Image 1: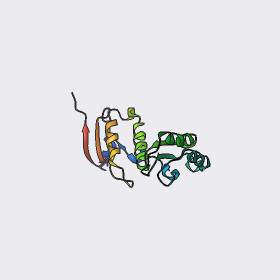
Image 2 (image 1 turned 45 degrees about the horizontal axis):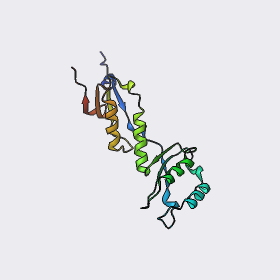
Image 3 (image 1 turned 90 degrees about the vertical axis):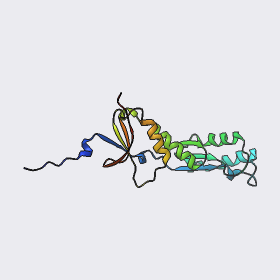
Image 4 (image 1 turned 90 degrees about the horizontal axis):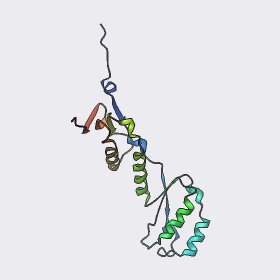
Length: 169
């Protein structure tokens, strides 16, 4: 008699979620430092002229971080003016440096998850991969899934660390 081999992991009903699927596309920057007179002062007339001459096509369909890396006082309208040029062409625009926008977009992508797909499921959040996922992403996915799932684990389906298990009342 031949023994039947079964895959207990696939039969367990565990759903694996890889956070790498939520990584945002690359971020481009728009640094107002490049438009400052002597690296310190923003002159309205010169700034407006420079924006008219800017090659905005370089930012088409990109996520753009708008900020000023110089230690200068930038009037709020300057950021607004830059965004008015970016709005028609950029995919997403956010205030802050490249890393801040990347993080915000990553969180936005995670927040867009349809939690109905995970109701009463056992979910493993993939912990190992080719791409390093920062801790904030694991915090966000836990916050979003915990209200609906049966359990959350970290790692791989064959070797997990329990994180959360809904108690039976």
